[in-house]
Length: 181
Image (cartoon, rainbow, N blue to C red):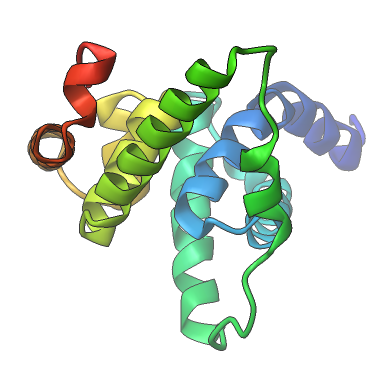
């Protein structure tokens, strides 16, 4: 009979390891702190490794996102309030990604600040949907599974979030400068 540990390792390599990048992006959307996201992914990978022998091989991403959702719920129950946020995160946003004219930098900074303010003004549940769909690139169904809500709820939250962001950008006058939100 084949070695059960070797079988478990093969299944883990086949179904879990290809999804690690997606797991990290989703974890960043759920936690907003890099260290917390990495911890959540590690917890998810550990739980997946323990359960991979019982996995039927169908829809590995959905299976992993469900494990992650359950892990995050457990972590939130046990978590103490964060005392300090990571100050390095803001430094990364200040470094220009490409060579740009001073005018482009000012407009981009103004636009980025307006979008960030509009995004921050959203309710947390709407922020999560925007992050999962637009930043992490998950489908509506995948985002619904992560959040444990129906697909229609994801779609309506995303619609409301986009509308609120667009209206806030229009109100600040920034949206018209960029030619659309």
